Image 1: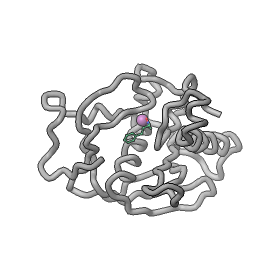
Image 2 (image 1 turned 135 degrees about the vertical axis):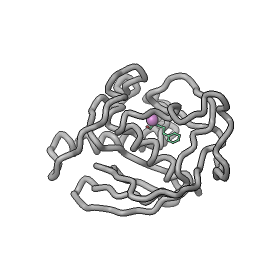
Image 3 (image 1 turned 90 degrees about the vertical axis):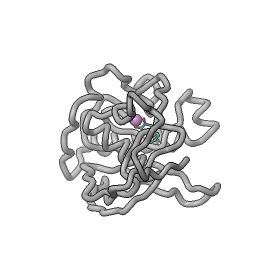
Image 4 (image 1 turned 90 degrees about the horizontal axis):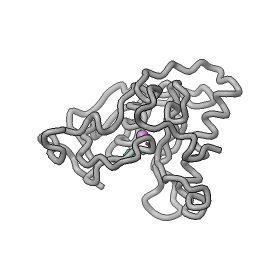
Length: 186
Ligand SMILES: OCN(O)CCCc1ccccc1
Ligand code: NI
């Protein structure tokens, strides 16, 4: 399983590269990578296991963050209510945002990243709604329409595959200003 020591940190050039497309059918190595990327999220979202393994909880983890420059990321947006079905759970491979709202969305508390140890305050304006195409580990293609939080998380992960980090989007002169009409939510 991945531990914090396995997470690449800002400054490591792998985080600024464009990741390579993944070939199908998945190699055994890529299948194991996908499994471990999701396993990290599941463990990190279990309070007891998170503490036991000294993890930082996360709702997404992209392959470059474990040093693998491939277009693969796990996303696990938990259910709003305890014990419910996750809002979004999958390992997205070769993801493409095929359409996006003009309207921005941003988290009122800003964003963080497992690969960025210090807090970087400020709004991270993203598209509030996206249509995402990706392939899953079994080679099935998906087209999903996402809005608000799951859309934000998927954009954060897809950024990692393009060598972009969340703070690249923060307005340096006015970090807590967001474009006109931005949907703000927590
Ligand atoms: O790349 C995943 N990762 O660094 C964990 C944090 C994910 C994340 C945090 C805030 C808003 C969107 C996504
Ligand atoms: Ni991140």
